[in-house]
Structures are given as C-alpha cells and as structure tokens.
Length: 104
Image (cartoon, rainbow, N blue to C red; front, side, top):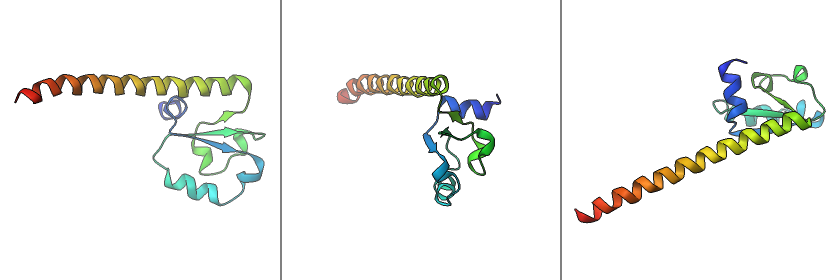
C-alpha cells in the first residue's frame, strides 16, 4: 500500500458512504471536490472498489465487511486517541505557561 493510501485509511477526515443508489449521482463528485485535499475513506456498501469512478476511485476504500469495518473503526479510534493526547498535552503546556504569564 503506498503512503498516501495508507494515510487515507489510517487518518480519514471523512468516511464517505457509497452504495448503488448514490454511486452514479453527480452530487458526490461536487461534495468530494470540495474536500479534494482531505483524506477520505469511501465505505462501500454492496459495491466493489473496481466499480468506483472518479473522484472516488482516487481513495483507498473499505468494503462493508466485518473485518474491514473493524479495521476502519480501530483506525478512527486510534486517531481520536492521538487527538485527545495532543489536546491534553497542549492544555498542560498552556497551564504551565500560564503560571509564568501571571508573574509578569
């Protein structure tokens, strides 16, 4: 798996649900065009990745199987945990810096 595809699966900003009824509509292309620089993970329901058309075929997709769904949920959970850790770290830094700022 190349690095960009790996990033899309590990850290998606958006999980985009794709199913037969919305696959051939024009509006998904507009929505995804607005998010062109964001990591997106198409979640395929009753569709094979080989059936995807641009722009959806640019992204690493996940089938709606038990194993792939679990992998995606774990990935999202890991990302959320990393965000929480970073937030907590920044809060500690700001509190520490706040002690010095009050003295000045």
